[in-house]
Amino acid sequence: MNPSKRKICQVMALALSSVSATAAMAAGPVVLGGGSSLVAPLMGSVSQPNTEIGLFGTSEATFTYYLPDSGAGQNGFLSNVPSFFGSTVTGTVDFANSDGALTTAQVTNYNNGTIGRNSGPLIQIPYVVTPITIPLVNAPAVTSATTPQTTPNQAHSIALDDDDLCGIFSGKLTNWNQVKNPETGATYNVNSPITVLYRADNSGTTELLTRHLAAVCTTANTASGVTFVDSLTFANTSAFPSGVPSNFVSATGSGGVRSALLTIQSSSGSPAAVAYLSPAYTNTFLAPSSSSASSQLQVASLFNARNSTYYAPTAANATMAMGSSSIASPTGTAAADPTQWAPISGTNYTALANPASGYPVSGMSQIILSQCYADANVTKAVLDFLYDHYTNATFASVVHGNGFDTVSPNLQTGIVADFLTANRNKLNIGNPTVCSGKGR
Image (cartoon, rainbow, N blue to C red):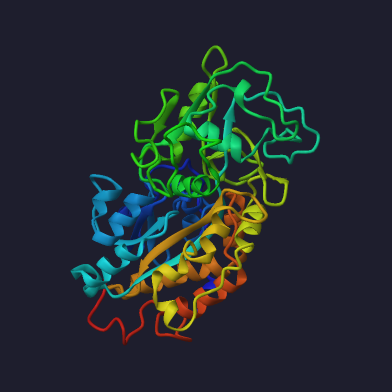
């Protein structure tokens, strides 16, 4: 097997849909997955050449990707119930993508349950590094000559700091004339009420934002009664015991947030709005090859208080934030624990939630898989797809083109050695000893 020499199938570009392919297009088995809408423009479909599924083609199998949200991806995989991806979806759930990591309890319950015992061990590994952008509609005019570029044809950006983020997303700051410009220390001289758009679903994008807010927000910079918690659900009762403020509006999925922003942007009276999104849904400065970035939304830069620097939400700045935590690839017995591959616990938690340098709201999106598949053709297709994702330069280019970064070399080395080859630990997908008589 030499996946790096696979001939890439030429395909015709079409707009991203909620399902990436159909069974009728499959040359081999359908490999069914879904979950995170954050990475959906990267995953794409067989009809989109600038996506990973489009690059992989259909010579081995047809990968399909549904994009409800990270929580549905987790639940669909753990229960092997494809209807979490949509009421009409059928088949075996072969993989899921989630920007929120599985908990120890979820992994333990799966491995001890019937599905886990019959399918073989669960695998959870980092897939991409991502910033979480703060898109703006009808924000104050950009007057800075020092903040970084975040948007096409706009040399500099509106900057926000942690006090601004905590105030806006808690409801303490409801008008631009209450928001402080971190460059000057003065509030913006614009009387424009702000609508805050948040995810109504179980979103990994939400978790990456709330992880940072939980680390930096205090009673001084947050609305009374609001206490942010690291959660897939933004409007949970632990954070907002009295409910979200009246200027907050919910939307479902990354695409839903983007559509809501564009609707506000086109409304009369120039209403203002603030939200949070994957870079792949914002603009072509941050995600030049994303089919979902053509709306050219304005995006804020963020001030990192730990090193007093303004950062744009670029892939490089997200990786800088992740690098500050010195994440190492698990080895030995730790490598067999899926929770050890999602670097959000122990001493790494604070470093990731409030990094010493780099873009402050950054994280990793995970892919969740089974070590064992009943169909050998699915096993081979999954292995080859992952090998391409982690080692193929063309796939890396697509990752970068959607505003994400590839995982660090030490993580990549560990993933290839443990899960894609038989070099160590017997964790490799399809291991004949582990998978004898088992398979999803």
